[in-house]
Amino acid sequence: MDLQIRSIKSNLEKVREKVALAALKSGRRPEDVKIVVVSKGQPASILQAAVLAGAGILGENYPEEAVFKMIKMGKQEGVEWHMIGHLQSRKAKIIVENFDLMHSLDSLKLAEKLNRLCKEGGKRLPVLLEFNVGGEESKGGWEAANEEAWLQFLPDIENCLSLSNLDIRGLMTMPPWNENPERTRPYFVKLRKLQDFLKNAFPHNSFSELSMGTSVDFEVATQEGATYIRVGEAILGRRPPKTAN
Ligand SMILES: *Cc1c(COP(=O)(O)O)cnc(C)c1O
Image 1 (cartoon, rainbow, N blue to C red):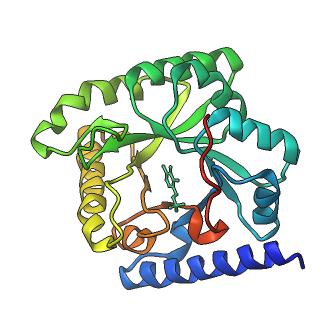
Image 2: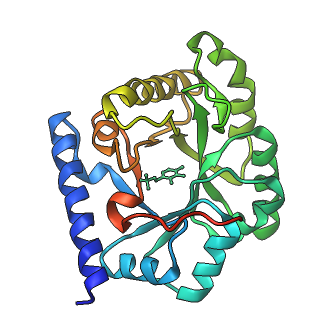
């Protein structure tokens, strides 16, 4: 086997083992945690190696970069492409036409645009709602740092739920970066709590998916209820430095 495939396969197996232990430790089933292999900034050859190593979901942040790699790789049977980065609404069509799930739906305006494009294309797009539980300026999502203010975004969420071509499956967050995962744990707990809050407010939707945790903190995220973890460098190795996009 190709050296690159072997190395990715070994990394993927290590992540799976850690996820399984973290899940069992918290009374969860390992198979309920899906691994999104984050491939932004990596060349198509690495993505191809990841697929051959067993990656079933690839996560990308930039629409044009992702489509460039999709075209280069051709049809990949059984592989899902997930959009995990902030989306400028003028690029919404690229997502509707090429992606299987969007983690980073962060405004009603974008939801309405995606819904309209889905309708035109005869499609239904699975999405997660992104919340900013850490309150950082630089992060996307509905402002959710202050629990007292959670009522404020309920009208937006209700409107999103009424869009018939969007399938709202759950919540996503990208907390403030910290190398110590215990520092990040409270943000994962908060997203989980927000999930309960939304379930309670809109009982006809289960909001069952929770997308949280990256290379440094996916075990803690798993313990706190993640159903998607988004792991890049721990599986694919260091990303090449980002160039202008
Ligand atoms: C880059 C990225 C990740 C993965 O980060 P790693 O440190 O490579 O694991 C996860 N989620 C989002 C939104 C990202 O942009």
